[in-house]
Length: 348
Image (cartoon, rainbow, N blue to C red; front, side, top):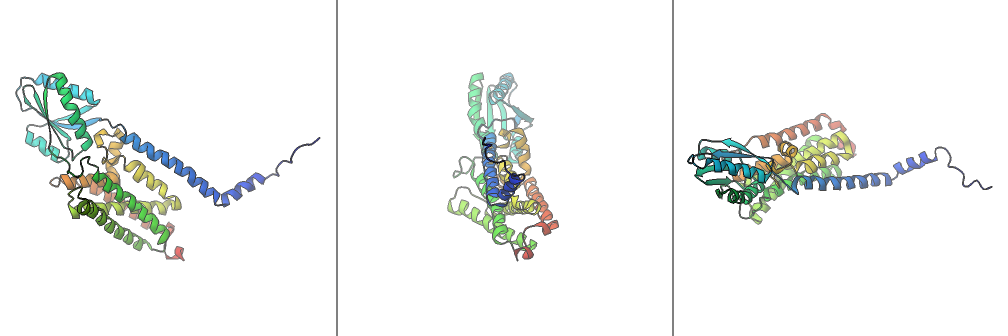
């Protein structure tokens, strides 16, 4: 009787697997699977953060300098507005409109509710602080006012530049700085592998300065989309590019050729959707709204918004965040520089 083909010799499967792992097909298969997962995570992270933004807590200044009559109707308006928004207004009371406006200029609040007339409310928004929040309040408040019989007047105290009506230009230039920053570091690791540690940091700083200048010049001088404070915006973009490049270099030092994975995850999958550039922080899912401020993309967007629209109220936190990531990355790279796959010895 025919017993069929002979069983594979013991160890044949292991030899086949070893041969596959030694062939170029193994890394090609791994990269294919990684790209599929990365594509899904990339789409998912942006859809989760931006497809259906909804407010959670909107810091709002409240000034009750109107007559006592009608206050019950105005309270009814605030309650109805919160119900329509599906969130709560983080109401912060101020004694005067001037004090509330100062808080808005300092980006401590996103809107001002001024209760001035017996049956009227003045709502002040700041598109420059958060265009998505301002647009939502501007569209929702009048409808709510009509439903409860309260007259609502909406004014924009900080409108966006005419060339950037949706408020996305600053997000895009920060995104460009982040991505080109670590792409530059990747290219250095491939085409300028022989750079020693100090040289690598110096070249990263050089392409960051040149790249930041190019982005600023195109957006301001060529396109005229936003009236940028040229030197200030240039330095923010250069700082962002350097930080992004050194973050990749840090991971390249720690885990070698797979450094792109944590860099992409930190800067693109997590950092950009939570940056507050495309969707303001009060409208992001709560964890992202908190985390984003402490990552380089969010710090870059925040620094640009303040420099362009709120120059009289500078903030330290965005620059400390960029500096912290830069110092951490440079320190890790320098301490474990012998592990980095570069330098004169490795190149030779």
